[in-house]
Structures are given as structure tokens and as C-alpha cells.
Amino acid sequence: MVRPKHFPNPFPREHQDVLIQDRIWFAPEVRETPFRFMGFEDPSLFGKKGPIALEYCSGNGIWIAAKAEASPDRHFLAVEMKWKRIKRIWSKIQNHSLSNLIGVCGEAFSWTKRFIPDASIDQVYINFPDPWPKKKHTKYRLINSAFLLEVARILQPGGEFTVVTDHIAYSESIIKLLLSSPHFTPLCPDPYFLTEWEGYGSSYFEEIWRNKGLDIRYIPFRRK
Image 1: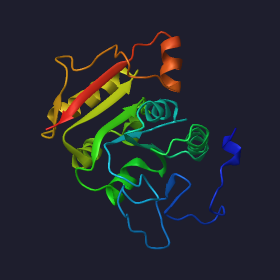
Image 2: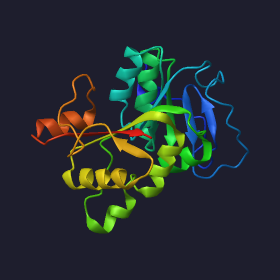
Image 3: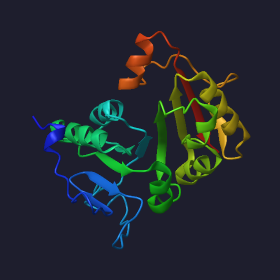
Image 4: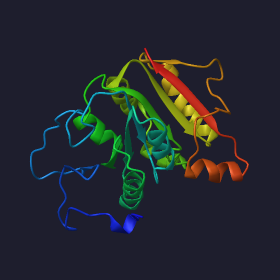
């Protein structure tokens, strides 16, 4: 069995670059050599056409690896900034032979803006994004107006965007942003979220928060 410690780091500590290798897409903020995205059909990525689901804040990859294993005819991208979590995603890809899953090691907004083509993604998911609960830290939240513009840009018309969170205040902020956007329409009536979603799948953070008795909110919207 492959373990995260077996992850083949392609870079010395002092140098990193944009690279797709061994089903991991490395996308540091600063790159030293030119990189041209060849498209999702390139052999270094999926190698063929197919619907693509993208998950931001993938954590250890439990949710998206299960989805990829259950749907071998679909393609999946797992975006995670923390190196130790990318190693865990990589080990799941190797141990379950998930040729339809690519891990992305990079900052979500920057990677999306730099590399992802317009209308190329079918579904976008964000499971338990960091709520940055202190008022002085809300500027660090991933989901803001600029980020939603990028999500709208990469989604195909009719594509779905789903956020899952246990944080009530953050959920209300997300819903307010989505309702004010000209690019999205809700998939469920007021209050625009679900508290149960059969078959959605579970993740590391969902299990933690449910065990603590917290309510989970699923917020599904569609690209107009």
C-alpha cells in the first residue's frame, strides 16, 4: 500500500515550478519557467474528453476520491493548498488506481484564474471552506465576489455550484453573494439551502461537525 510519506516530491525545498507529474498538478504562486496548459485531454491529465467536477478545499481527499471511484466515466480535480494534504490525496489516487482524479497543489483563486478555460467545468464543489470566523479575518475567506466571477467563468451554462458548510454566518454570507450575482440561480427555494442530501457523500470535516451535533448546510446553485 502506498502511503503519503512515499510521495515523490519533484522539487528541492528552495525551488518549485508549475508541473504536472504523477497525477499531481503543482501550481505555486511564482513560477520560474514558462508553462502552457495543454488542455484536459492531454495525456498528463485525463487523456480524453469527459465531464469534469472540481472540488476546492479538498482536504485529505476523502470525499472526492470516493466520487471518482464511484464514477469512472467522469473526471475530477481536487484543489488543495496544503502540501501534507496533497500527499494524502496522491496516496488515494495510487491505492485506488484513480486515473480520473488529479490533485492540484496550489491556491484556488490564482490557479483558476491562470489556467482554467472558460466554460470547461461541469460541476464545482466547496466542502467546508475555512470560515475565518473573526471579523478581522473575513477578508481571507475564499468565497467572495471576485472568486464567484471565476467560478461563473469556468462553469458551463447550467453547470452546478455547491457549497457545504457548518458555519451559519458564513452560509448566510455565501447565499447573499450568490443571490446578488447575475450569474447564478438557486436550486432550492428560500432559505436556499438543504440540511440533508442523500447520496452526497461524506468528508473528514463533515464527520467531525456531525459528531459534535452541528447542522450542515448544503447550498446548491446553478450557472445561468
